[in-house]
Picture 1 (tube, rainbow, N blue to C red):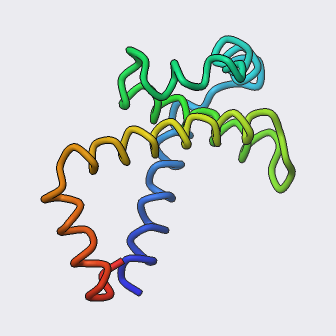
Picture 2: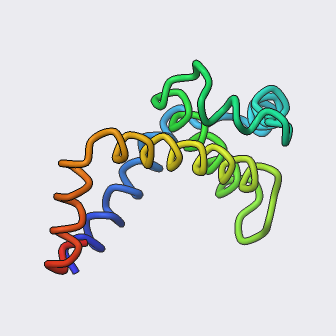
Length: 115
């Protein structure tokens, strides 16, 4: 329960911070166009030179654009945010595979009910 509350608070804080310098609709459109990933480019996004920090930053901007300009509906912002989210998760999975001691701790905590 605490984790759920913490997650909601973190999301609210992230969105509140993002609103301080919220992108305009035109900026959202320009970002979505320039950050678009073709199906052939997915592997490059997963394994390429872009840092995980940049992947997460783009995902948050696109999610903010989706929530601000296309709430409660499927949009190209949301779809593209999911592409970056997937790339982030692939990088995280690769990290856990390279560090079995951390993966073991994750599994141990999960078995103990820590989410």
